[in-house]
Image 1: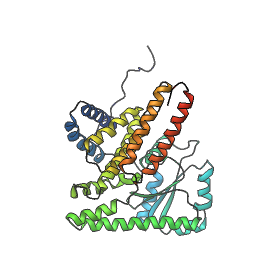
Image 2 (image 1 turned 45 degrees about the vertical axis):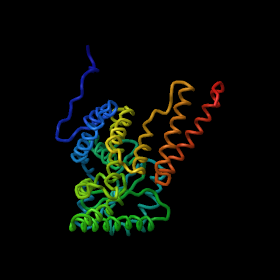
Image 3 (image 1 turned 180 degrees about the vertical axis):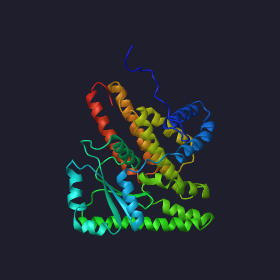
Image 4 (image 1 turned 135 degrees about the horizontal axis):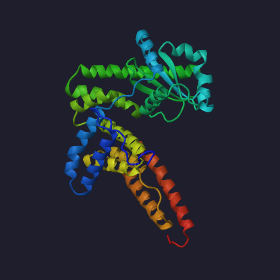
Length: 355
């Protein structure tokens, strides 16, 4: 028999890092533990395993263009602005290039504070396959899912801000990037002050600085978050909980994308909630809202679809009631309206089913 053996297993990568697949298997096991009444065991096991997986995560290599820009930045005291763009695509990519990035009012002002580098993702692949893979991994790390995006890095290569298209012209765009750099400098100063203090003051300064970081960029501040966790185990300002939830959401996205099993996302969220029964209401709401994206949205027939839709509305209303004024409340209300509209349509299609 020739051809590929369908049962042949792919080689397993070895190393000190806990693999994505291993984390998923652990979380599935923990979810099963919670359903069999042994929640205490899940609560004990989950945080340690997840923290170890995060702590040993390997950061993707810098693309060659970014490495060269960082060398220039280190020798000139500037930061780096990485422009993620699709050069052979019109729309916003062409507009930001022609109306902003290539204009003298931008290049003159930006060059004083940034080494600007283009990281192109052409629709027609060019260059080596390996170089393209490095760039794609780098973009994935920062959740670059649309273009154009400008990612700002400090001299060490740590990402600290993202920007997209903005109205106002090239000078205003340069000023916006400069303001983001100034905010980073202020945050770094506050983190340095935190290192020079102890106890409550140290924790307060660090929490205030880390709480301003874009959720998509927290991975680059993992060391600082873990230091804060050690210094403030009670998490008085809730910054560590926000960080852990952000990492949970990222991990679920990666696991589901790899396994193509949406149910695994539900298991991970359920395991996290079981491990954190005292989570503040607004943060619990955030986890439940993220979990909702992985719930099956359709059934096999009109009746089951109606019942499912009704359950979604009930769950969303309970979710909203947890924190009606949270940053996520508006999104939940939009989902409720969408589900109610869908329910009305299903009932119209199933005229033989009474309301």
